[in-house]
Image (tube, one colour):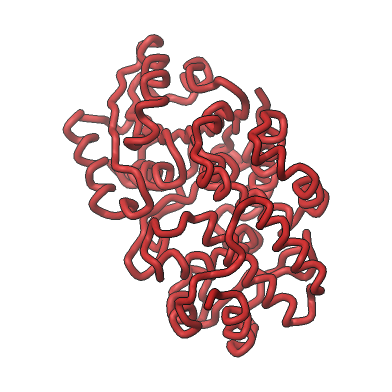
Amino acid sequence: MRTLKVALGARSYPIHIGDRLLERGDLILPYLKAPLAAIVSNETVAPLYLPGLAGALRAAGVQVTEIVLPDGEQYKNWQTLNRIFDALLESRCERATTIIALGGGVIGDLAGFAAATYQRGVPFIQVPTTLLAQVDSSVGGKTGINHPLGKNMVGAFWQPRLVLADTDTLRTLPERELRAGLAEVIKYGLIRDLPFFSWLEGNMERLRAREPDALTHAVERSCASKAEVVAADETESGVRALLNLGHTFGHAIEAGLGYGEWLHGEAVAAGTVMAMELSRRLGWLGEADLARTVSLFERAGLPTQGPALGADRYLELMALDKKVAAGKLRLILLEAIGRGVIRGDVPAAEIRAAIEACCRG
């Protein structure tokens, strides 16, 4: 097991990364406020891992409430969130009850938002079971739900007390979900870690083959990068926005197609290519840089072109992005591979041209 730390003063917390950690109740017990826990999972993950986690906690004397939700991005909404509240209230869960998210990014966001708001805030632990959640969404305290007009538009910053990333769960991850997680892994190399990007170029086939050492390295390097950024800018007032490379375009894809049609990582991959095409048009990236990145996404099995929603629809949806400030869209772009920047002065005509160059049809 390897342990990293998200340094947030009194609210600092560890990220444990390793194999077969789910049944290690001793890793979780120190972070429970009381021997009370509510585990939130979904219909896909629960049959695989809920009995082991709940059993380990019960064996240690913890009273456990199990909450199983439907699986899919389309359920990341008020109705599903209310199902969590219903279960918590029916089980008479208290302020000392720790909510544990067992699943991917949707479960982590839903359970985290429930923890942030139930009885005005209860303790929270992340146990991510997808690659995307392990390298990104479980770390940093972003929680929330989707709105029909925009992704993650309703939520709260609510840091977990612990992140427990059991890489053994990646064995059962569907291939499409594994590929989607690789989009977020590649992102870290693009925005701030050129040596890691080069490592990914040399090891993508090992990651696709789920070689344990390669996956563990990718998870650890990604988490270390995110932990540094979150510690420097917890509430995304500055540098943390760099973690959203490709997301403004990608969120437009998800909302435009309907949540769940494309996986988040698939939309981020296509959105990142749009951001890089825009960076090329602004004179920062060369054709070789763009081609190099497109090749890596293709080797990861990810889309490099967005759906043909039409540039007008993309721009309409992007105008609802959380990074809009004073009516101006702020975009995450690249000055070079490994060096991301935040810009709010990009001409609309250039944004439109980049979208049109990177869409099917």
